[in-house]
Amino acid sequence: MPGVIHWSMTEPASMNLEPKPMSAFLPPSHAQITDPETPMVDVLGGASRWTIPLHEHGFVALVDSMPRLVPMGQTADQAVVQAARVSYGAGTKKVNEDRGLIRYLLRHEHTTPFEMVEFKFHVSMPIFVARQWIRHRTANVNEYSGRYSVMPDRFYRVGLDAVRKQSPSNRQGGEEVFDGGNAKELKTAQEFVAYLDHVEGLYKKYEELIEQGVSRELARVGLPTSQFTQWYWKCDLHNILRFLKLRLDAHAQQEIRDYAQAMHDLIAPIVPVTMEAWRDYHLESLRLTRLEIEAVADISRGGPGELASDNSRERAEWDAKRQRLGL
Image (cartoon, rainbow, N blue to C red; front, side):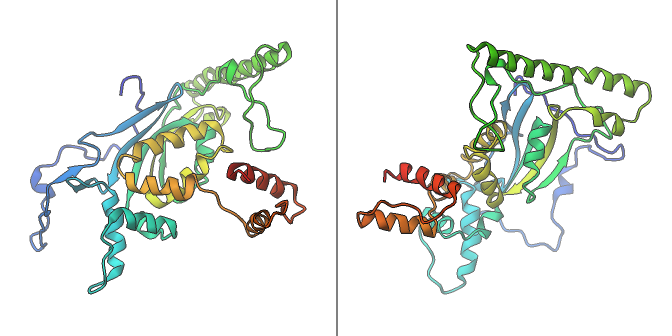
């Protein structure tokens, strides 16, 4: 994709990547071969990858999918339905409508059929994003190695108009930016951008020390988390949806939300029925606790609907839900 920098993973010198003859992909002679009942189509449309650029040096690329081939006129949602219907067994009544079955599965949190679909991504992101991302321990990951290769001269930068303040109520982050029209706040934002310039400037020292013989595995320890890394990340659809539920949330850090949105946009055309149901029942749904249900019942009886809790955070969350519900 124009403007996207693709890094190559370091491969062992002994690997033979020469093209294989077609005969090398024939099944063993004792295998039974079943031809598809209908023509099959590639869910990526024959492309080697779909890439969405992010920030200055980042991207999310979808490089493979399982299934990769689906019957013509269908999507990869078909693999979810296929897996779910195995449970019905011979002689039982089948669910006739695939969309209805997928919505039922998600509505009632029957998760294993969604594990039958997998996606593999190639991602370039700042290290601080990668460290948040790796908290989701349900994927297969292979990251660019600063022990084997020199880390590239690519860093995440923030503009003056995007320097965020620490939230007084959320210890993990902040949404409000410094006011460029306020001299004091502008000065703070300028100091932060200068701070990033300073730590990025240490890359030259990193290069110099490597040239002087310091090992790559040791020289890298002084690099900042604004440095870009990359990895291949493969995960099943069920756990991708759990990742997206957390990382598309308004409370997630903006930078990782950008990556989560790109992942969402890449897989949505491949499993459109699943994504529609997931948005309905999970991403854009509202879950009520026992105390909140009791408060709703109190409102229905004409009461004030106050939450029976002395926890200020619980009460604040209930107030937000009440506002969303129009109560």
